[in-house]
Image (tube, rainbow, N blue to C red; front, side, top):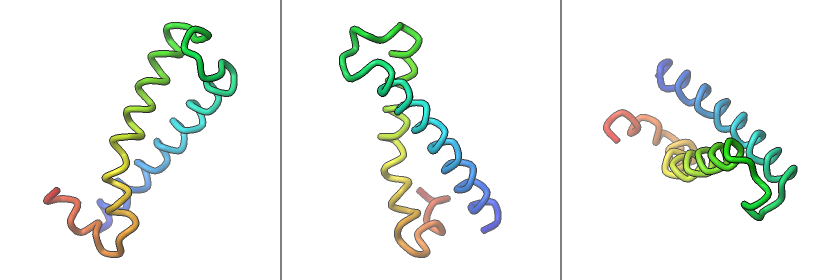
Length: 73
């Protein structure tokens, strides 16, 4: 359980940092991709895909006791 807790803590910290970076990029450049540099566009797409991959993981965080099912998943 300690390892699972540490994993969840680090994952949530990384998601929070990525979310702040994503909102900063979108706030600076807007929604249209023509305003982005290549690095910003690549970073925006990477973070968006990471956040979409994080959605199934949030189910384990929301449901009480579901983090015990995380290793078999």
